[in-house]
Every structure is written in structure tokens, then in C-alpha cells.
Length: 336
Image (cartoon, rainbow, N blue to C red; front, side, top):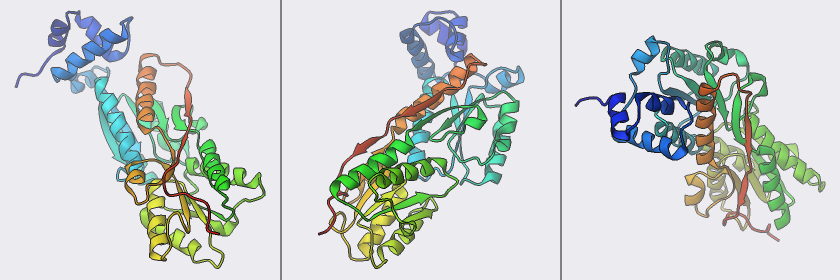
């Protein structure tokens, strides 16, 4: 099969090769409609720039890296799909790296992405200190954070307003009449989870109803840990009537624990989750959630990186999107 060239794209689009090059680099005064038309032609012809030649020439390789904690987590799977789809629309391939939130893996993948000479990196994994990302910054790679923020890195970011999400969850449960509230949080290293818990606790405390320390548990990001922690809380003499789970995996574990103890959702215990992945919509009952706009977050993160490539020196942008409370059948007033 003969590989399509930039000349083929230019001929098909009826433009110069310089115009095609401007589209790929995000430069030039080209209308959005014309830009999308040329990108569609590139996709139809399966045109990809010669990454090796570009790298050797010190030019763009049209490759992005994506660091996520766990690709098996539906939230990060949906983020990865959005990043990959939008990246491909703009002519970029995406290398996805699952770090398990282990700093040694982050370090190894950062080294790999440098060797691949990627143009930019989207970071969705926790990084406790900036030294791990220093090699990327030293090589002037475009960086954007997704679903988290770290102002010390000086990088652009896109995330949901986690503090507000926690408040929405608490206000919903308090409005239903719940007074014994419990929280399944993620590990304390996960800053987004910390903000969700803080928002939840502050909203409850404003009415003098903050959860006791026995009702707040830090979990690993696994269903099994959500199950174990929820079961321990529900076996207390005065068990909580509502659980706020900081992600859908923890909520699934909580549902398992509730059923195993012979209790019902929401009649005996209400559950509010955070994320709104496919899991939240297929459980029985479907979960009330604080939803994150995952597809929009992925697209915006790619745009931040690509924009940074075409206009280096531009100040970092921090985009904060509003969360949304979606009420389903997992919440109800507490038992009498």
C-alpha cells in the first residue's frame, strides 16, 4: 500500500502544502471550517507525517503522551478515549501510560516519552513533587494536567470544581434528611479527592452535622477497598444512613457491602458517587452522582497542549468546569 504524502493531501484539498503544514501545526489564519475539512482529508487518506524524519530534524512528531493512574478505572478509560479521539482529529497519535500512581513507573514513562520525542504530555496521574516531571520541562515539552491541578508545576490544567462537587453531594443528602453521613475517600495523595471531602465536610459542618472521624475512610482506588471500608462502617453500632463515595469504583464496592449485610439501597442506606462513568448507570439501582464532563475534559486537555505547541511562552491556563448533581435511584430519605 502506497503511503499518502503531504502533496496528496494538498492536491485533494486544493491548497498549498504550506497550508496543510499550517493546519498540522495549528498555525496560520485558516478558517475553522477549512481547517476541519483538511483534517478530514488527512484522516480519509490515512496521512501521517513521517515521525522519525520530523524527530531527526528537530520538528514535531505529532505524538502526545497520556499518563493516567489506572486505565482499567472507567473514569480514566473514558478520559483516554476522549484524548485519543480528539488527538487523532488533530493529526496526533497518543501513547497511553498507566502508572498505578507509583512514582517509579511515572519516572520510567517520562523517560520513555522523552525517547519517543513526543510533542506534549497530558498528566492525569498523581505526582507528589515536580522533580519527576523536570525532564519534560527541561525539554520544553507542552504539558497539561487533567482531573487535577498543581500550580507549582506552572502547567495548564483542566479539572472539575471538586470542592463544589463535595458540597453538592452533602447538600443533597442533608436535604433528604440524612444526619449520619459517611465518606469513602481516595488516598490522601489524591488532591482531587481531598477537595471533594473538604467540600462535603464543610457543607455538613455549616449545619453542625460534620461526619465523625469514624465515618471518614481513606481507600485505595479499588472496588475491594470500597467494599471493605463500607462494610466496617455499616457494622458500627450506630451505622451511617448515607455514604458519599469519591469515585464510582468505591461506590460499587459500597453497594456490594450493603447487600451482603442484608441492607437495601436506598431504603436502609443512600449512596452518592462521584464521576458518572458507565458503572454508575448500569448498577441496580442506578447511582446518584456528582458528574464530571469527561469527554469535554479530554478535548480541552488536548487543545491546551496543541495551543501551547503553536504559541510557546503563553501563560498557563487553568480551566475549572462545574460539576453536576444527577439524581437517580440510589438516594432517598433515611429510614424512620
